[in-house]
Length: 465
Figure: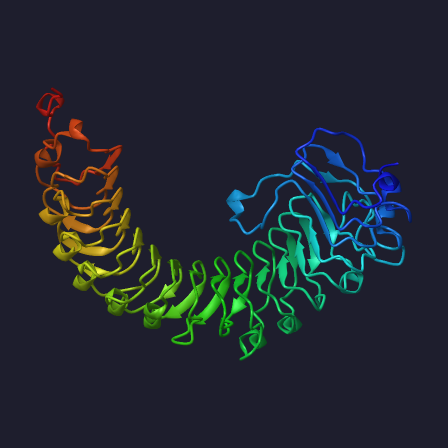
């Protein structure tokens, strides 16, 4: 018998196999695998049955880590990245007889065995259904890491967590109810409950000084949370609250200084864009789009020392006004920026020449200003060979721009959208650019207004030599 044949085995991994059948119940006997510390069943295209006996008093007394998943690693991806599991756990729960689990037709359920030394339990993408056991905290007193992401678990979140818990991923399930205030007493470094059906507010106590002092990753996106966002824990490096119904103004100060990622899009935040964000040296991506923000985009974000790591800035779909700042075209401004989206706002004025000056926006790959009140002509400087040297996508559709369309001499540009604007002049300058010399155009959109511009015939286009 396997378990008795390897009395000193401490690590057992079943991975990328085509083995069929069920896992032996005798592995959990009082004489089997008494030294086993890590058991991994991962990336298997087979049906796995976890025997109920594995939750018995004698099963794996030294077990510290149990992984049953068809995809290893942390599950914090967006909903579009989730894939259907090919590993299905078909058993009753691993709970003792007096433990509770929901439903009588359980395909698989969350185990709650008596493993006093278990520190890590990873069951992501394993087709789990049912709810977390009522005695979850008592069953795993030493548990530090729990990952049940991308399953079909339902019911409320556990009201308390094991005292040593530092990593909790319950994302991609169907949990309901509210976020437990008492979780603030745990020393979590990562908390993921995104893509569930949670309601209520983010507990105000989570924003109290000294609470959750080591929390670095807070992922609450894609729920139905309401109310204002409390002050963020001081050590956060990433916060995702997208696609909820959160309200109120964004904090004017006291942003965690180590923040690298802020995604708060798809809520109902109002007020202005916080100028203090300029002081965050590590911020790489800022998404505040599709809220109700007003006022102007802070000019201070373009100061030489402001946002030195920012590569993506998305503010689309708000109520922002004002004009495009000339200072954003300074060589020292927003140097790493690759993606800038200000579309769907009330921004007006003209396109600044400074944005296309040599050295400005030297890494910008995508610029989206569509559906704004920008007017005037498209500056000739914007089509010069030195302008936007890495720009691939330019969206200027649905604006008040008019006049002629210049020849875009950028060799990287692949897509330009000028549709639903007011261009009325000859397109000859655009077409006379020698496309065969390296221009990468794959898409050009131009809707014709009542006064049609002159579009050259194919015979007038430059010929390849």
